[in-house]
Image (tube, rainbow, N blue to C red; front, top):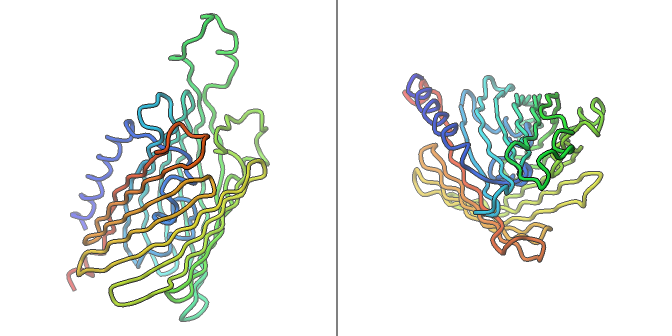
Length: 310
């Protein structure tokens, strides 16, 4: 167990060491969701096996070499403590020009097993959010610009995410989640520093079907849809193939977002240590360039020492 904790500590140090240098965009778009589902829907924490520990950190870069471009950094640590209970901690930081949005989250998942082939999982994430804006490095024509001081520089509030996920054998899984449903009823909208829907009520639905399941090959189709009350809905569709080669598991896929983005994804898993890389290319005229960002993440899944020894 000590060796496992040492590995987690090493990864954590690396995460905090690079977290100040990485760039990305919205949390709902930052993985993409299908590579690390539990970041957005806590019901997927239950996919871990008993006593497994999963550590992950990642970032999505947006518009490289553009000052003030959106960025998101993600760090999470999860464990399945019992057959029915999983809990974790994750930290998400958004940065966009002068805006900072830090979310400290405690996700929980309960497994409500229906029968031998079906499982329903329920998740809830309590989120402590620090929202702030900093104009100290801004350049204005008027050094005494009154608007510069007309804002709340630092705000703390409580929010939550709730979700469910249904699993049928290893072939089908689908889930739904609602995000930011507390803040809309407890905080005046004018007091929120709301960039890119960070604090807007949001609904999420996803579905994944394994179309082919063989000993060393699995082919899956995924559909995801995000809905808010003030912005157009966003849909995503992916086709993934997973290859199992002894202790190596390779997942590759392609996808399309209704924002006119084409996505490629690669996940490499070797003995529980995994690497995720995605690229995103935009085919519309409302981006700064054809290349609109990529995601990079590393993680590990640790099995119990007792189980390894057996």
